[in-house]
Image (cartoon, rainbow, N blue to C red; front, side, top):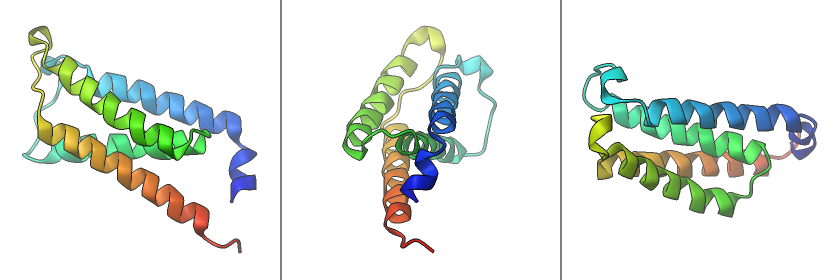
Length: 119
């Protein structure tokens, strides 16, 4: 699997960059730009976003340990920024936990895929 993924290094880095930019748009949009949703959907968005960051980060060649440290820090920073009154957003521990769980699931999925025997 490593050879297949290494052959697409530029695509992997591009995919990671796109997910990072998407995270900026989702996490830092003003509250007025956030559409209403049923309860709990925002946690799925947070978790899915950080799962995507973890998977594309690993695909782009970032080390597991680096992502395991940086993604929770990024999640915490995003929650602190959302607490800025001008954004009209709420910073919550539950959102941060959803981010961290999403990142950890993404890292775990990557590890499982890497350990899969070749066909």
